[in-house]
Image (cartoon, rainbow, N blue to C red):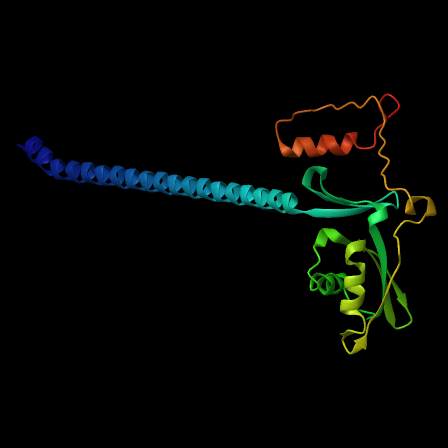
Length: 227
C-alpha cells in the first residue's frame, strides 16, 4: 500500500519534470530557429548590400567610360597643324598650318577663365574644333590670349568681337596672317607625315581592368628592343 501511494505521489512530479523539459526543449528550439532566421536575414542583407555595391561600381565604370568616350582633345602638332582627337586617339579634324591664323586677344580680366574665352568664340558660331587657345599670359592687371583658328574665321572673329566688352573692359583683337612659326610653311600647300618603321603592335588581354591598369603602369616607358 505504501509503495503504491509513493508511486502515486511521484507521478505528478515526473509529469511536471517532463513538461518542464519539453518546455525547455521547445524554448531552445525557438531560440535556435530565431538565431537561424536572424543569420539568414543578415546573410540576405549582406548579399543585397554587396550586389548594390557592385551595381554602383559598374555604374561608375560605365559613367567613366562614357565620359572618356565623349572626351575631345586638341593638339598643336609640330607647331604647324591643329589636330582634334576623340577617345582612342581617333582623329576627328585637322587644320593644316597654312589654313591657321593667330588671333591675339587683349584686355581680358586677369581672373578670366578659359571657358569664358571659349564661350565668347562659340558665340560667333565657330565650331570648337576650329580653334584652340594656345596660351594665356598675364600682362599687368589683364590677360592676353593667343588663339589658333581656322583662317576662314579669323576676320569674322576680329570684326565680330573687336571692341566688345567683357566685365566692363573693352577687348582688343589682332589677327596674324599665318599660324606657322616658320616662313617655309607659309607658301607650302602640303603636309609632311612621318612615322617609324617597322611599326609593331602588341595586344595583351587581362582578366580584369585592375590587372590591366597595373600592368600598364609597370610597362609604361619601359625600353623594349631599343624602343
